[in-house]
Length: 287
Image (cartoon, rainbow, N blue to C red; front, side, top):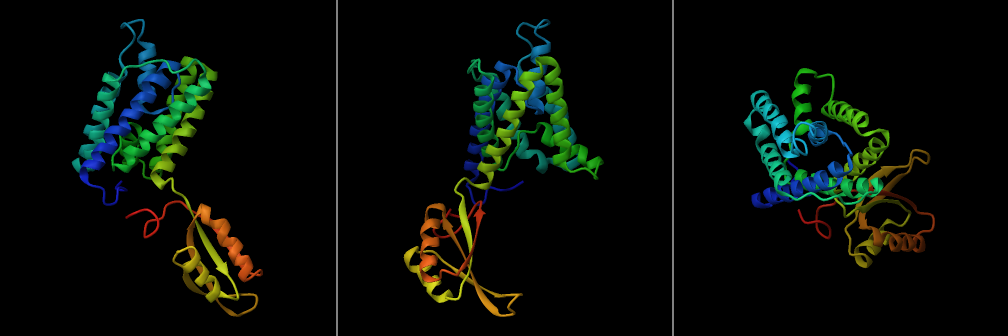
């Protein structure tokens, strides 16, 4: 999944390395320390560590389990999907494994809610950075891609939800229902934060304007707000009249001023406002 645009190659690798460092911090110092199983191979690693404490010191280290689980998955993926498919996923997994091995672990808090919130925030940012770097960390997303190759009637997202859900259920059995419920909060936060990082945090507003004074409104947008505006030919189906619908994108802080100015020019104007999750171009994010 290539979503990095024109970033230099070294920036892509830097994003993956920094992202996996944040993920490892969340796993070791938040989720493992509090017994919160959030799914994925990291969740399985936490379960294995907890289940082997009576057999091996403090249990099998997280990085060992993560590496062992990923080796056969990568070999299968390389055989089925090709080397190019697993190239950056391999970098992400190796980076995460190294961070899990070298980063010191500490217990962030005894409050499960704080652990879920901060752990979810850290891991969400980490995953978002890894995806911005065009990589993944292997794990259940790579496993889901392999399974989907044989079960075409299921999407990769559906398979991942099933696998991660199963891991969380086992965690519920091992650590108890209460911790599993906090883990679900962390999972939700991870998803929301990583989506925000990937889609862009600098949200703008897309505005459609239907007015009897398109020239005056357009001039105001271009001169007062210094924004571009586009006229779209439209037809009112009730009146049967041809109209010129205006479209522009503005920052959130500019929206209030825009609506006020439109009301002054044409109090009867019809204005539709929507979210623009990410905008590339002059005056917004650089391409």
